[in-house]
Image 1 (spheres, rainbow, N blue to C red):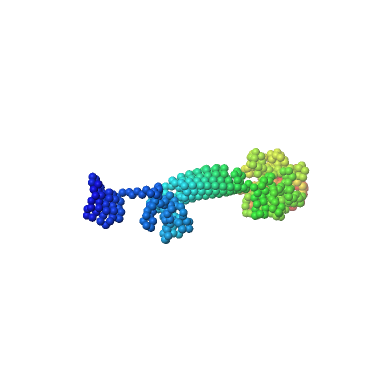
Image 2 (image 1 turned 90 degrees about the vertical axis):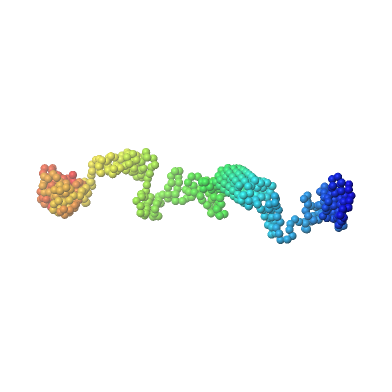
Length: 558
């Protein structure tokens, strides 16, 4: 070692390495381990103080400058990295004493701030809030605007946005689902991509993972539903085992028959229990028999009853229904003043029928029956589907037995035949009146044009000179007789000509006629005479009444 005094510096130097472990400068400062010192004691290296040294202790000076090793937790100022003891909650704190915010950082990035107003602000998490171990741990921190509060709440979320979860493992598996709300331990726990769901309560929609727009409120409501859409479960365990969609459960237990059940897909609403209306009456819980009606006793008791047991205007006996006082009561449809046992009335401007009878079975006709009091004399009428004809039959059970009258689908009318081949087809005799003295004309007439001078009613006429015309005749042997003028007809006019039936004829002035004689054409123009056995003239019928000469008499034509 070399000890020297150079330029006012006392130096101890290693002569071999030229290092200066100790020197005293002219100003009195001491240097250890170096040539130049910048303070009263300048040590180029470490200082070891062994007395009182304990791992983690720090050197503390007293007022005299004496330094000792001290447990930092015993110090009254500052917060230790290993915690502090002896603190006073009323005086010790971490924070600011001026109008400044308190900011916490990680990796030198602002993460948490307590504002001077007491607001707890979270930064740089993509507009999201994560509170709890592993809450939102996998969020990609884009602007997802999620709120996850609770142990492992939303821990699997990556890009899902607009979600709100509060509770242990709430929305834990959610990855891409959006706008879900989960409040409660394990609410929507396994949801992965389902969106717009609301779950409130322990284990609500716990097993759900893909369905949308479900609402579950209540302990374990909708727990087992995995992919349903549009369900609503309200109440403790409501719809716990329901796995479908568009269902409504309102219950307080795990039941397949909740108090209120609904199916939104079919607009069905069902009450599994008593339904009370306005605290006035309660509907029955079981259905009544067919055709029963609902009755109230006025005290809130409602029941199903047979309407015919109420003693009203109708009585039911077996399969028969009839007015209770059938001897005096009438039935009305469309009027309140019936004039018959059955009165159907309509005052609407319509061509629709007032009464309709229809048989759906096309193998049988649709009929209406008319019978005498003891069913001895019967008629039925109706439509026969076999040929689309309308028939009247002298039978109570068969429209095609003893058929008396037929209107075919062609419009032809048959009497005594079911297959009329003309507009009127009569199979049998045609009789008019009863053959006795008559007071009125009952003849069948046609319209023809008078091709000659005016004629009087009762004149005998023959075929005229033009088509569809007639003239009067005075030819006793004339065989072109048509009939008798049924009314006075002027020349050139159209009038009625009686061609059969009972008609009045004009008698010749020289001849009286008696009943039973043949009516023959006479010698006077348009007049007739009578004879017992035709030997002259043309017979046009038989007199039904006596008639004086130059008078009139009734004749049965042809």
